[in-house]
Image (cartoon, rainbow, N blue to C red; front, side, top):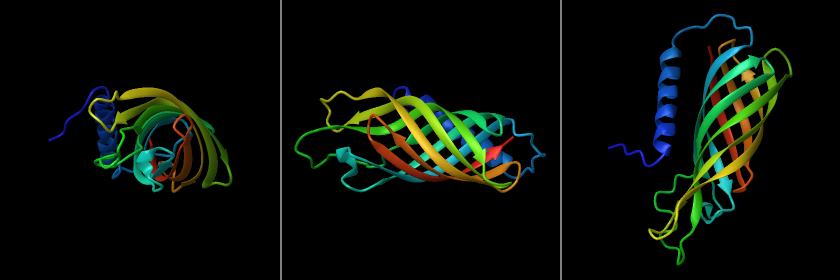
Length: 185
């Protein structure tokens, strides 16, 4: 049974709807694009940070995004990313702690072409990171956090692209490396 706790339920529902729309559109070939328009993205990666929840290891990280390209070099997007997949974090820790669980934010992306198919990009964003608590008596919270990133993109055609990206969430000191697909309308 799906349960959507507090305000994150809306973000997860939006992410699921975006994924369904992307899968529905995957079978349709798109027309040549002029570099402007709506896009959907999905990525999988690895998150690692200094929080006790990572224990020196990294956790899987999933992200969904929806954005708009104003031109081939500038876009803005909304995104949601998981930062932790531990089922029972801190279960055997003597003291409880608060850890980053997920992030929902917005970002600006600046791209520069390398050749016809490859481009490099940088991103600057801000959003809310959900901080979960490992003990019942502790207060869970959300914090505003900036993020920066850089990536390399490869365009298969005008509609589909592959992206390798490094992102850093500054307040919680989390590093994410991800590989994703982007579908442009």
